[in-house]
Image (cartoon, rainbow, N blue to C red; front, side, top):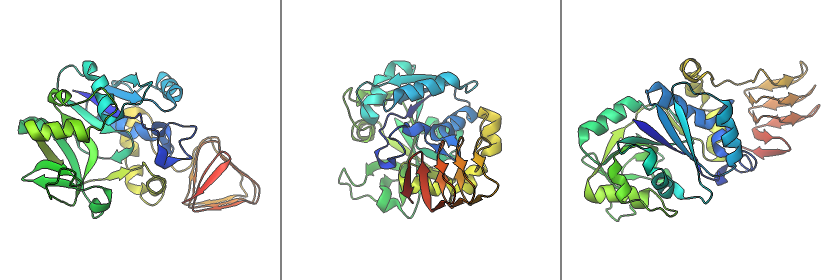
Amino acid sequence: MNAFVLAAGFGTRLRPLTETTPKPLVPVLNVPSICYTLFLLSEAGFRKAIINIHHHPDSLLRYFDEHDFGNLEIVLSEETTILGTGGGLKKCEHLLDDDDFLLINSDIISDIDLRALVERHRSSGLGGTLALHETPLAAEIGQVGLRDGLVLDFRNMRGTGLLSSCIYTGTAVLSPHIFRYLSEEFSSIVDTGFTGLIDHVGLGSYEHRGMWQDIGTIQNFYRANLDGNLCILQLGERMNARIGMAPHLISPQADISPDARVTQSVVGERCSIASGAVVEHSVLLPGTVIERGSVIRNTIAGPGWTVPA
């Protein structure tokens, strides 16, 4: 089975992190965020990942030219005009071999059992199966409307009145049937493909009860790096064995003065922290320079800028 990875967004909610870096390459615990998705695919035995790209495409083309993901073949689909989640998928219909495939976002970190999700879908006979996650924040994030295990609505946009404590994780197994309802123009897969499946062949659900973190906003990015990083760090050994990289707090390529104090922080490669500087509960992106005697607390910092978290 092949996979399609959604990675073409502008990363608007992550600015200024994404002004010079595409969102899929913004690091979480010193690993490009998309690599957490590629690790899951590789571990589950997927052989090909088709990734749509648009924002800062040269950076992504160069990254995947320089990095090998072993048995996982990477195919990039560059969108000169951004097509959205629906149009971007429709553009790659010919690459998905007219078979069931996995759809997954590049801005999530999870330990979803993709094999179990695939098995649930194949046994259902439905047009697609969405991985859902129960959270008390469902009303804020976007509730999925359910009845008898079937997905029938999103945020009550179809007027069903169905609500739940579950959200869509950005992960699904879909049949080629979905392409009948997708538009080649800019569009949302929820408004086109998912709605088409609901109305004609059914859309099932699979509940994921493990770790799931969205890193698409400044607040969620900060939380994933610091307050919610334990579960991510625990993936390290598996990730290193599969894709040769693992989450870590302090890059060995960082230059930290012995007279600086760094506590509860993430420090990226090529960072420089001068004598007498204090860095507490902060995320320093690659190339950040902290001058002598500076104090950085509860902050995300990049080269030449800082964002209070």
